[in-house]
Image (cartoon, rainbow, N blue to C red; front, side, top):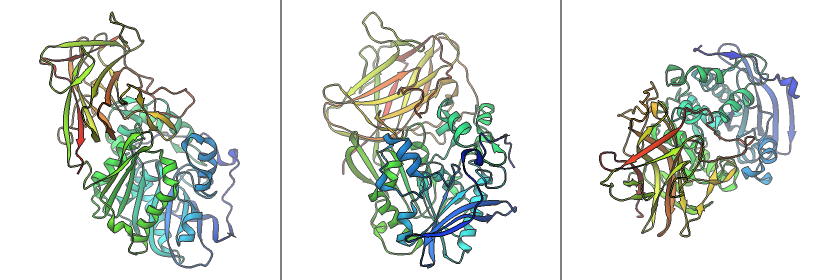
Length: 559
């Protein structure tokens, strides 16, 4: 067992009205339902599962849904009613779909079993809960092999699901269980440090504490204290390596679905997962909508069915005609067009540099010859003598012709913390229409006012990994802090998460740099926030002469 910390669970199952285990078997319509079936793991620990399969008793392949939120907590109850702005329609999901998992009312009539599991240590499954780790992956491996041995199973098992239910797929597929035949990771992070707990080295202070202290810890024994562990490991180390997926070990068929709309949680990790897995049969789909709603839509489930029919039932399906990469290039909101590509990252994306012309608040095609500087307050707003806001830096580029930007961006910035030895930088990219109005997009599963893209960096974490970094995507080591001298300019490269957006002639790309989150929502709303910054006083941005600051954007030509 790794270097983990544990705590008493926030709540016990019986305290929230969940009794168990209470084995039960019954028929509802064409579903044979078995509740609280005991699954024995390799060390003798018992976990519990709910099985949904055809009444006929025929042998069928199985879909495993593995997540910590409780197999009793359904998508219908939690999402449709608690998060109405998430866009999940009641008619698209039945009462037995585990939160973020497959719907038995859809899959069983199509000749599949669905297995919903409470992993070790959560709810009333036995043992001590460990999350996002090798130990949990081994438990999932055992469960897959248990399913394959059941007399009702053909011996082929697949996995599908959103977020945590996608994350565990990366982990267990790397172990290569003999009977895991295909996976469908639907928007799940793969690097817990960079994509969830510390964005650009800046601690995430709302959703991470909520998730680790309120959503996860319900069980009958001890549960891992992820919150304390994250506080004790502010830099990348062996602990965080244990929470990152070994993607290069994955070789089985994979239908990977990502979204441009989940910056701060799933976008980066899902795309990284597709890029790094070694599967011969792999497909990537990138949409621009809200993740939960998109997962349960009829057209999405039809594609899931085609994928699993191909690899769990060995049928010829449309999958054989799919392009390797299918991505939705957004125009505004949920409007846009689907594009097909041969690779991810898109091989024909051309890195184009747009240079910061600070005096005019513009992005320009050539670097300014003369040095200009702009400073902004990081703790409060204000205006300078020209009545320009000081709370942030804004530079615009108006496109003379139509372009499509598909992929990550890199902001190379010369910056100085005038009053401190460190600084947290928050970067946003927006689209403006021809009249100068901000064009918005779905964002973070339940909002409709999102930007094109976001990026973050604590400048003491500016050290790059030269092997993994590219012209379009810097990768930071996060292994040490390099403080700066107040007032001394340093060059930093900020990773801006991938996006796919079309700009028509006369439309504008706006770059924003400031010392606080780009998006602002009421405190009670679920969102990734960064309220514990190191910022103090003023930041100065420099561009021109020997201080060349620029934004690199991936321009994709139309075939």
